[in-house]
Length: 169
Image (cartoon, rainbow, N blue to C red; front, side, top):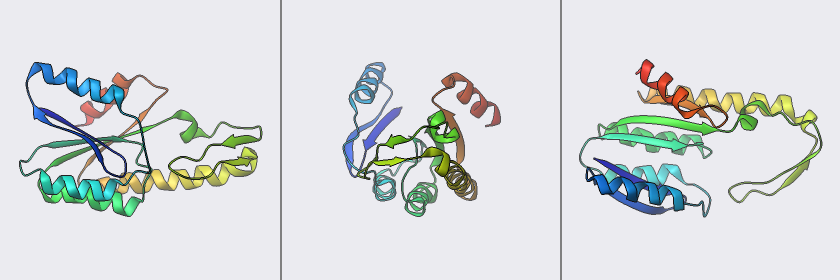
């Protein structure tokens, strides 16, 4: 049985788990039609879901994980406390990982942050250090909470990332 929850600062859609073959179409339809509406609040949402889901299961989180890390990890820990098996797929674009920019660029603020015009050559080293520290903190947080973690890059085939995950698991 597979269920689906989409959310930003609140739950937008909750499809309860079902093993009916027609349910897959509904899951895919919801995924196709989902659009972000507001700033994400993963921690409180995860706490709410952990309290609702009484039957143990596998919780798969597919996200860029751009949120307050302590709140996010506390919410994920709640799933583990309720005896769920937690798998994290962090989906990132190559540009977020490599910062391949060289010309002055307008960076669009996401999740209610302002747009910024900047010279990327002046920012590159600090950005890569900060982003690297964020990724390490995410991985360490998942490891400490006994959750599986896999980075999925949007510039690489999905099957390669999933195969690497399944081979390790």
